[in-house]
Image (tube, rainbow, N blue to C red; front, side):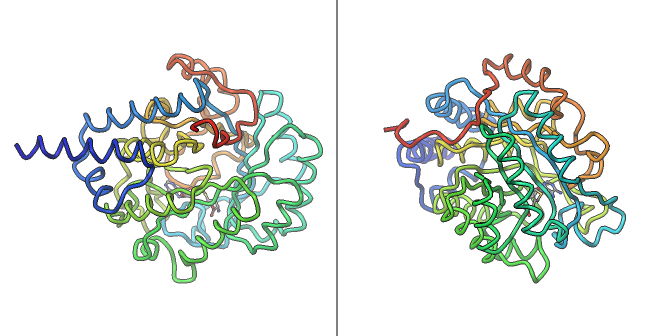
Length: 359
Ligand code: SAH
């Protein structure tokens, strides 16, 4: 009996999310507690259907260029944190980055994502010059940055130089949880302010978080969902936490496939038009992780365009994959596996769908 009324409650909240793209705390709790395979499948089917209505059978690709692993921050979960003295550090030159873009363009990429640690070598001057060069040479491409927390002036300068999008995961919207993941000098409030600034400057903005990071509770995930509803980001990056052996979290448990898929589906239902990657971390914990992510509602994949000799150094977590379908050279294999699911890789920039598609 209890189980049945639980099922009814679950459906009621799921339907409400689909109709209203809004839930209160208690309703989120109903969806997030007691996850079962059956519920996951139902959410995934709803999320997939909605994504298809908006984007059709198209999956977007982004070429990821990990251009520096120097970082001034010390996030407890991250393998390229400042205190990891054993990380082999590297940074790509402007010419190397441009060369990655050229390779990527030839392969069919029309979005380049420049991601890195917070590296003071890359001053605003160097970064804006870089962006201008890419903008000049690849006029039909989107430029996405993911270089952490900067001042409004910096974000403005990058935008003027030609950057279109910015990825800055909020990591967790729960204060207490944020403090468990970061040293004192890193503040959730600063991160959120950055996200708001990015939106106000007209960036297509990406927030997001890891699933199963140490200390993550259902209540913290509810905070994440409510924060995403408020922020209305154009992109949301969600992937499992994976421990790195040279961080304080070396002995912690990895985030699960199931929870990641579950949350991907919920985020699709909360933000129907969102650009939602099936992340490298998801592909790392499960051989079919990316495909499962797509079936749960994701519509973006981000193959690695970094030069092969530095890929093994951008190690945010242990065993990070970088040579198979997640590598740009593996694009044909990726295409085949996406086609096998009944989808195609899109060859345009893949901007967020206009609001009218749902009207
Ligand atoms: N310096 C940039 C880019 C960070 S790396 C920034 O601050 O935004 C991109 C993302 O990788 C991070 O936002 C984090 O969510 C994720 N990440 C870092 N360490 C990880 C780990 N151990 N397991 C899974 N994901 C991790």
